[in-house]
Image (cartoon, rainbow, N blue to C red):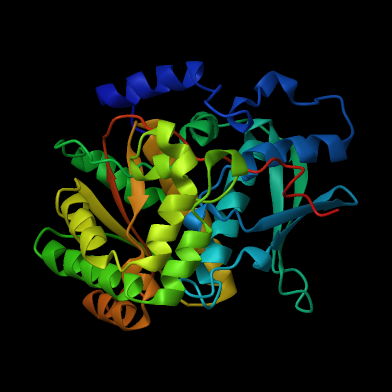
Length: 364
């Protein structure tokens, strides 16, 4: 349950009441535009406005949606895969799981139950879930708070403030990952200070290994886009002034052409070693079902964090590099397979990345 005893919690609640409008057009979707008396297909398509705001690696947004017989079908869009950073499409499917959770929270916020089938057709591996509107139901306060955090959630790569998260809040964030009654076991681990240097060393080593790989650099460079492209990583997402957005092609060329591993490792070392919280999400298995469940758990965690004005960014390098992932797993032998590594803390607000519209993510 969300605890309102902390002053930040109370102020966050009040702030979310006034920040359902956000900085991009997609984030301005107004609740009162929900077609209450419209056809079910119209209602479902409106709800997808919230699904497409989920996090994804390189902001690839690797999901597609279709509405068939009053059912939303969620597909993995493997044309947006990252074969170097994510050869098994593990993170791609995690991202789709996060979109699924956003959709479920939106459905609940508008007063319906959510009926979900995971991997409903074995002959269609790209079809990850089917979602139907259930019966009308009473909306819980916590669901409303998570819903209002959707437009305020995006990755923040700036330095975090030297301000610790209350222990009670850290516990709530851990619980958030596991409180959906997930069909598969999800574990969380706030990294103890005693082993943080070892984890940070894995992040640094991951940076150096990945940036030394020309194929990885080329793939990353291909997803450095100007903000107007609606996907990918714009320069401002890395803390560069938005006025330099037109230089995206030049930045892309530099990333592709030069091994910037040392400078990236130095930057990430400082961000990771000073982060108020480093946290990892694990799953009991390492299948598509586990990845979908991880995505839902991740989205719940990130939305819960934004309720209290907490930002997050990712350090998935030790999980993307197979030999480093096995070392990370060995540090937590009881937790299963590491899927996500991220930092959490308070920071200045930054600009969100652009998103494709529902129509762009809709299967024709």
